[in-house]
Length: 109
Length: 110
Image (cartoon, rainbow over all chains, first blue to last red):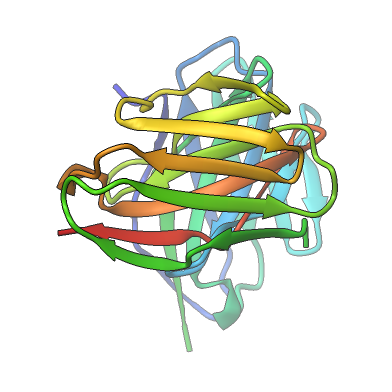
């Protein structure tokens, strides 16, 4: 079983739709959580850190559920430019970042 | 922009040859990392560094070595390249808890 699991998708949604991704993690010692966005053949870019109380950045909302060991990402009012792969990442200790394999999102015109 | 560059950006090499990839950062970050990314796998840590001459192994370190003689440079060496090392290699730094990545090196071993 992978330490961080994501539905690979693709999620095909029309412009303007709301879409949500979940990510589950197995290491209860994970302390910090992140969502990254990766475009095809590019490096991952930090989208947002995920805080215990949940956090929002514009159209993006991230939630953490420690009891059930999952994090979620909600994208409202999807844009064509949101099409990418979204990576879920956990951190335990100082350097142990564990990456999910990503969820592909395609926003359709 | 975390000021991270990688070189070369693309390389094709033959099995059995040594290869060195370079990661260069301009902002004096202490922690640097090397990852590889392959289909069906998340990014996997090869080696990381927590200071000049301070390095440690990650999850997939076999066949790789690293060196960090200056804060700004973190070198990854494939001692004798194999086809299983065909991959995209990303360097990263951490700023606080957040990681930032270089543009990647696409390596093909034939």
